[in-house]
Image (cartoon, rainbow, N blue to C red):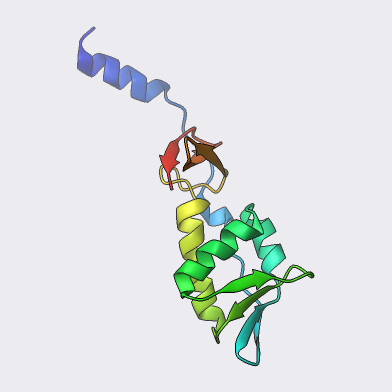
Length: 132
């Protein structure tokens, strides 16, 4: 059997990955201004929908928005500065692209693993592993 025959056989026997990334949408942030701070009311719920730890999401948003922030006792994120919902939505979309959606199959069935100090995105759907 030559290489082309083996390649054709391998492609035929490879299972199709069912599903699509459209079943996943980045949740809309519910934000309000409180003085010179922005309160992200549904932060805990958004993190739950993304399947990620709040501290990880918040650190990314701080870097993306260029601000400082903390999570209060009720699970809301308080961002220093005034940010509208669209700006925070853009940050959440960037987070999802980098840390939630698989770069190979586009599905959100992923976990973040640490390996020798580096973050690796492990996809449960297709088995792909990629650095974040």
